[in-house]
Length: 286
Image: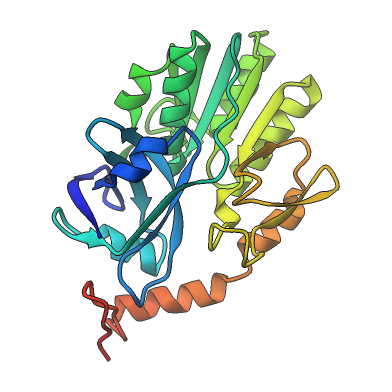
């Protein structure tokens, strides 16, 4: 069992959990993810690692409520435990050795770019982080990103903080202003990552996107995370989650993201109505 030793509210719907998982922390690197399950009868979901401390043996994850399992996780408190916390899984994030790298984080996707920024900065790479959310009250990790970036730029959909628009608008403005950018890494909703690739493609800027939104079991066995990259079939969880954004077939990827929308909506509604609620001890009510 993996005990929650610290919980922090980042927004009304986004929570940070520091989990006691020394074996995972020992091998965790930027870009890795874990498969998390609350109880025996619950589903396992992939969550990208937001931070880790090898000495303390802890791994930090950030969860935004979007459905049944994420709501269930966010209802946990310090001292509660996960029955599964499997990892680290996936491939590490691509890391440039020099130059100027721009990181884009959308919504709760800001948290996973934190260790990427930290590692790049430690290597001496110039790091600009562009972070965004629908509104200022949903913006997360601004202070954390400031500590590991040379510059942090903010965008909000409603203009409540920073640029009124999307993170890709900020990136586009940087390019139009003639800033030298060697590489871009984007983590966030699928439309944001596709838009990032569209902005950088005409300029030939190497762009990496994290295809974790389509992952389910995290081991490559279920096949749900199949995607086409450069005309070849890849698995998001074992070959990725990072891929060349200019080579990803986003039309196919969007369809995969929506495959279980109706089932996810029904499960979330049943959870909210307390129908067959799975208990932390492993049993189910109803």
